[in-house]
Length: 488
Image (cartoon, rainbow, N blue to C red):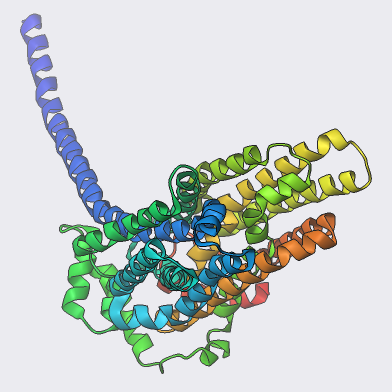
C-alpha cells in the first residue's frame, strides 16, 4: 500500500512537472523565434551598411593613392614637383565642391542615388588617371575622384544613421571611418608592388561592388517619408526591421517628426546660423574644426618626413607601424561607440592625442638641445603612434557620427554640406601649413596641436551632448532643451 502510494506520488509529481516542462519548451521556442527574427531584421541593416561603406573604402583609396605613386608617376609622365603637387592636392578642391553640393544631391535624388552618382564620378576619374598621358587628363581624373568622395563623405554616414536602430547606430556609423582607414592602407600597400596605372584600376572595384549592392538594399526610410513616398517608406522600414517586426511605433515617430518639419520653410546655408539651428551647427562645425586642427592630416601625410627629421634611420618601419595600428584601434572604437558613449570616447581620444603630440614635441626639443639623443627617434615614433591610436579610437570617427545625428532632417542637407566643407577646408589648411610650421619649429608645431587637443576636451565637455541610444528625434529634443542650454 505504501509502495503504491509512493508510486502515485511520483506519478503525480511527473504530471505536475509536465506542464512546466512544456511551458519551458514553449518559452525556449519563443526565444529562439525572437532571436531568429532579430537576426533576420539586423541582417538587412548590416547588408545595407556593408554596401554603403564601399564608398568609404573608395574614399580611403582615393586619399591614399598619391603617396606610394609619386616617383613612378613623375618619372613616367615627366612631371615636375610642382605639377605633381597640383595632382596630389586637386582632390581636395574636388572634394570641397562635392561637399558643397552633397546635401542637395542627396535630398534631390535620394541617399542611394547620391551614392550611385558618386561611384560613377569616381570610376570616370580613375579611368582618366589610368589612360592619362599628360598632366591635364591626370588632374581631371583626380578632380573627379575628389568630387565623388566629397559626396561620399556626407552621404555614407547619413545613410547609415538613418537606417540603423538607435542602439546600433554609433557602431555601424563608425564602420565608415574604419573602411576609410582600410582603403588608404590597402592603397599604400598595393602601391608598393603594382604600377600606378594598375593601382588606379583597383580603385574602380569598390565602386563596382557599391553599384551592384545598391540594387539589393532599401532607400533610407526617413528620406522616403520626407519626400512623401509613404508606401515606399513603410516597405523600406519593414525590410530593414524584418517582415514580422512591429514597426508601427517607429514609423509613427518618424512620420510625426517629418510632418512637423514639412511645415517649416526649406533651410538655406544662411538659415543655419539662426537661433533654431545654431546649436547643431556649433556641434557639427566645432567637432570638424578640432578634428582637423589637432593636426591629423599634417602628421598623417608627412609621417615619414617626421620620422626622418627625428633621426629614425629606416622611416619605413615607422610608416608601416603607423598604417597597421589604425585598423585594429578603429575596430575597438566601433565596439565602444554604443557602449561607452560618444562624449567619453571623444574626451579620451583627445587626451590621447594630446599625450602623443606632447611626446613628439618633447623629442624634437631634446634633439634641438642635444639631450638624450639616442632616445629622440624612439620618443618621436612612440608619440606619433600614441597619437594615431588615440585619434583612431574616437576623434577619427565620432565627429562623423555626431554630424549625421545632430541636424534635423529638413536642414540635414544644408548643415551636412557646410560641415563637410569645413572639414575639407581644415584638411587643406593643416596639410598645406605643416611643412612650413615644421621648418619654423618642430617642437612648436606639435605643441600647437597639443593646445588644440586641450581645447577639444573643453569643447566636448561644454557643448557636445550625448547621443548614444537615442533616436534622431530624441537628439533634437535634447539639443533644443533648456537643460542643454545651461551646460554652455
